[in-house]
Length: 114
Length: 114
Image (cartoon, rainbow over all chains, first blue to last red; front, side):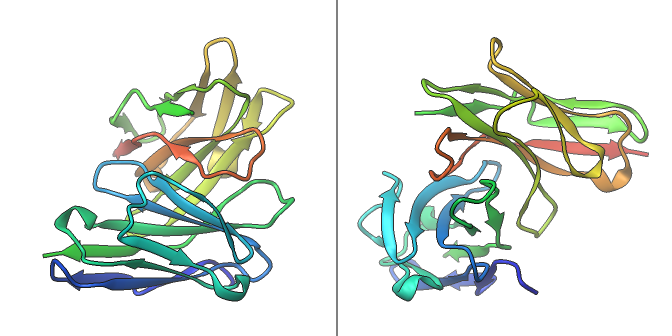
């Protein structure tokens, strides 16, 4: 399978704990995006990388959130001191620079904070 | 900044009937427009996109959409739906550069009745 993969698919954590999600983009894609989707809503943009550089961050990305993309390959999204409001589906997408602007989405990681 | 309004949160339609899912957007700059479909427990899949040129765009699975600049709309249509079209449909916009994160509408749940 050469699509975008995300791990884990599901994560249940207690409030106050830290969690980390991983996204592996399609191999030749150099742009990578993170979105958050809550129940009944469309995905909301969080941040994006071009190679290893984080180029844009949404105001939704509070200081408890940090994303990295070392070596411009996979990316991680960490949430520190989780709150119940962080419960959502976290989606990753990738795109090839100079491509047809189609973002390819992974299956998402569903986070439940209890 | 951009915004997207999907006027119907839920659209029930009988199998083999035509359907139209409405999308209006707001932007101070030219935009690219997209429709994505999300099946249960899956990531988003691109149905079609408008970048420039012909205002009528055709996508996968028999869907098409028409870009109307004066009405700032990008409605999605299918002449005859199938039970397998039951899913959540999202309209999205991106500034004309194409590299930025997408702004999504809240989604329309298409329900196909036998």
